[in-house]
Length: 250
Image 1 (cartoon, rainbow, N blue to C red):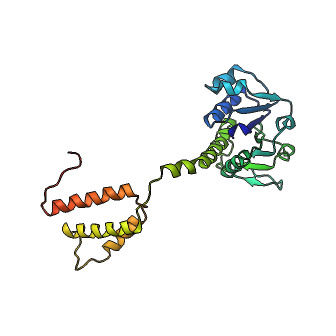
Image 2 (cartoon, one colour):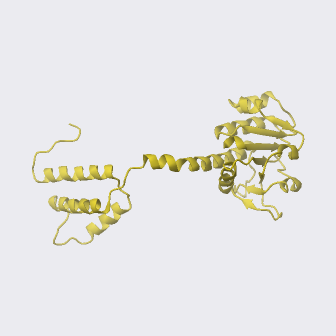
């Protein structure tokens, strides 16, 4: 799925930024880099800044125009350092990540387009994009380094990708929750234990048990945790009654 996503850098002026962007991409599992008329590439400085992501640079595609960079893409998202007057769909980085993974998961080719370091994308270039992405940075210091912008969107893409993979794995590992009747038996056991240790006066219970029910009700106690809790209560009662008991670590 991630192979369906390409990062497009337009007219990058500093080769170090190309290397930094490549490193950010590899951090987030992205590998397809397309460069539109870079001022200097290949470059030793790009290699140095890539810091281990040399494979992304070696496989980078260099093209003469944005149009060529977007060949085969059905969804294009262009970054903008500021809100524009163009009446175009605007998304934030999180929405961008979700959109990218949704579309890439359907086998579509996706492009994340980043503009020039000092001027961003032109209006004509933004009109080639289906969505505009605005990173809501500090308005008093809003300019992001190119590699940082790639890192932000790459992170959101990866988080959306991981979220899509998580449900099946989580369901396999999820433990069965304690049932309502098991919780009721626990509350009875807890109340008896609190009486045994003189923490609860059965003649003046006030709202203690109601508060404890609310506490444990928020916790989604599973069966393993219930077994531990019941064991603790049993051993506490033995101590309170002066009965022989065995420490768990013995």
